Length: 467
Image 1 (cartoon, rainbow, N blue to C red):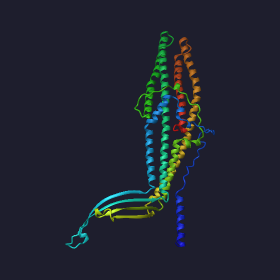
Image 2 (tube, rainbow, N blue to C red; image 1 turned 45 degrees about the horizontal axis):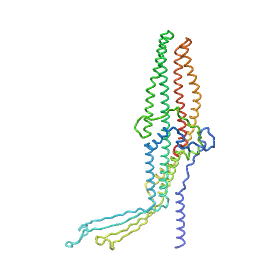
Image 3 (cartoon, helix red, strand yellow; image 1 turned 120 degrees about the vertical axis):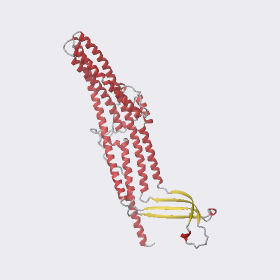
């Protein structure tokens, strides 16, 4: 080999390595600031309830049983598992592309040619019919010079990890939905109980008003007002019962059951979890499955961009075939061996803009995946901040609400006593105090519900429930 040829080969080698390095860039994760995503939180303590198993957070045995049923039967979760299987199959297919293909072919061919086409003189008898017996194996292999096949494999692997993270996100959301719906049912039960007690009390008030009217201490207007007050409580019963049934049906669907009644305890038996450690926001990258899924989606799009770039460079393909071929079946295994080996280098020259369009599309999809990752991370921080603040405000309201209910209870007792034994008040005062008491009692249940659901939402937003 001459010096000139050696020099040319060296240049070509360096050029090939340079181009390959240009395409096969090493993956680096999306750059996003994951610090200080929790509003008004500056703690550096990394302890977080996201690390807790869900059974440690939800201690109600009935709720635990419902969650276990949901994890075993929920149809959204089952669909997520099937999507993992699809992603795994795609990964196996992309891995197989790195190896040579192999296929077998067994054929018998009958052929007859035209005498006119062969221009034989008349009277010459030649057999124009032939049979060819052929058995062959053929293989093809594309050399992964530019890393196209390897990038496709890594993209498939990232998609598999994304599907697995998405499944875990479904699981955390499922646990939260079951718990929130369960607590909502308990709150509705308590509101129904309060309303029924109020109705019972107001029926007694109606009888009392009638007796006071007979004693000429109140007018007929007071009796009518007491009856209207009773009806105002009774008319809320159908809506409460409707809400209870709808929540029972919704919970049944989460458990993949037909709509039915749901066994449950009471809201008064619930003990809110107190140690609500949230850690630091950077931990969302490891704890939130949806954040992980968004990062894997970006990784898959990064590899797809590399695949799109590789289409601009030549592809080296090796094909080979060999076997047995004969015109006589009796000679099939003698002197009938054939083979061929072909190496091809294909360089795209004009592809009607397909390669450019493919690359632009891949780059845009990668940018979209990056923005989606950023948005998911920001939303995660917002959800944690909202849930934590909801818990804090619920705790504050409960303390004040207890004082309000106590004061209104005394007000109802005082106005009723005054109405019975003096003329210092009228039934309008009793009516106002009773309505305010019922509203405060129902709101008090809402405060309890807000606190319980804030704990659930904080746990989910931190990424708890899948470990």
